Length: 59
Image (spheres, rainbow, N blue to C red):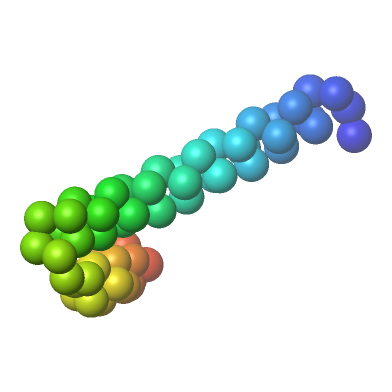
């Protein structure tokens, strides 16, 4: 394994982590905004995330 190969793997893992972080951040922000405005936790957020993930997986 050369240095460029290790660097390539590290960059790929970094972008994968950034992608996962952004999805979780958007979900958390959505929950925070709904809870802040309405005062209740919207349980449909998880359902919509699951439907979206399944749709992307099947596409």
